Image (cartoon, rainbow, N blue to C red; front, side, top):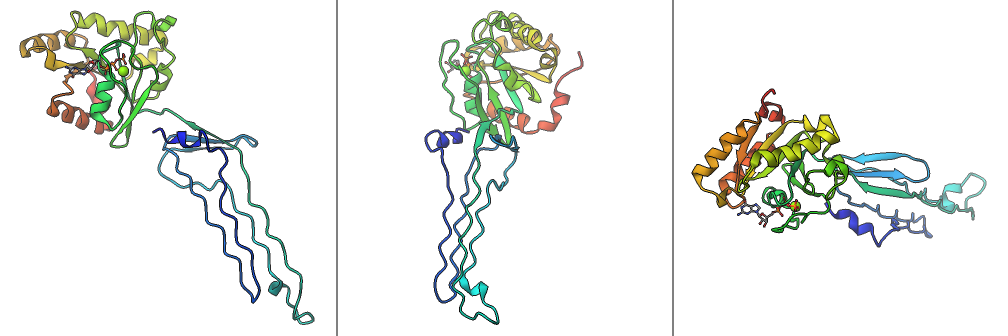
Length: 276
Ligand SMILES: Nc1nc2c(ncn2[C@@H]2O[C@H](COP(=O)(O)OP(=O)(O)OP(=O)(O)O)[C@@H](O)[C@H]2O)c(=O)[nH]1
Ligand SMILES: [Mg+2]
């Protein structure tokens, strides 16, 4: 996911030159192709022509042709001239100035109050290793991870007033506008889960009604810190919100596996929410 960093210092990339032809009808060898790996999700835009292409799946795109090689003297042979001295120079290869931009097209968005356990969950579900800390606003920029080809985005926590610019504000919500599913993380140890949920939901609504109305599941996090009976009571309470409720501890393997299965079955998201 951070593979665009390779271009931070190395800004000019050039394929190998072809080799010159030689005597005795020897053709010059072609230069090797230069293949540049970029992450899926990269947009390439040509700064001069405006041409754009999205690398939205694993594929190879031809960016610049090499120059045509020059014809050697043998090619100029004719009936009247059996040993021509004319030969051509090769042409220069194409050159392009490109902007490379990694677009955050996440399938699943993790939302919730600060410290709800979003980044921990991303780390449990994917190979991403975001910073985790026992204090609010550990995450300052969105983190991405992939699970079975689905991109999960962990965004900074939202607080009351976020839609008016409080905390880290809502500037990161645009990264989850295209997601198919929101996983709303609510800390199960909280004294008031409904208030926690509604705080974040209200901010989503303020930002965009269509975002707030996306398929959403509620995930009670950190369940290892509360007892079973407390968990059941809290699950019932949250069920009043008429959304599908799950619970997990990142330390319980079966919880994490269950969530992974749920998320990989992406096409059933719409069945996860009740009609409200
Ligand atoms: N016991 C327990 N602790 C957890 C669990 N999940 C997260 N935590 C802890 O909760 C704290 C906050 O976790 P983060 O993942 O940083 O929370 P976040 O929602 O990303 O927080 P922000 O980035 O600040 O919005 C950390 O100390 C984690 O170790 C869990 O399942 N069980
Ligand atoms: Mg975080």
